[in-house]
Image (cartoon, rainbow over all chains, first blue to last red):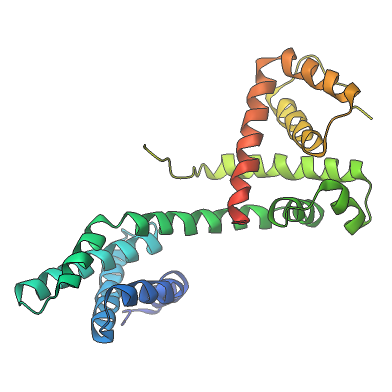
Length: 181
Length: 66
């Protein structure tokens, strides 16, 4: 993965490399051969850098995974042409071509990242209360005694928190992926 | 304690009031609050819309718990 200059190198380290473990894990589930995995990771990295140099990468993660998926499809097709395939490979092609679970997984991980950012943007007190209520599923009464607050304070801080979250969501204008069914 | 409900909610106010009702609804309303809630809800269409938005956000946060 050879970035050409330090600016792109930095960008690559910050925005692409963090996704590599997940990419490898997914590729390994499709390709038993580690060489194939390496090839696809390598080629995807080169392509994302090339695209970056042309200024065309808005979501590195999405770009990386989409590229890797296309390369993986190409690889399976090649293996089929060279008759080194088994019936399992045909299955693989179907899975890769469809890729629905995969896209869902990506959308979901982006949604989680986004929600985490939203929660982290809150002042401490609001964040604690919303976290205890929504992630740990605690009742407001229990949150009040856990934090040594009155139940009214829990309502009021929670109100501030949800109002701030609303503004955060609105500002980012990021909507969860709609399901068309 | 029930905060007074202003009769002409601006968008911002409706938003905050709705968030407040969301938390009260979540902990359970007293009979007195129930009346106040329905009054508030009927006062202005903006109120119901704001509450719906907060409910959606509230539900969306459940994603973090799965």
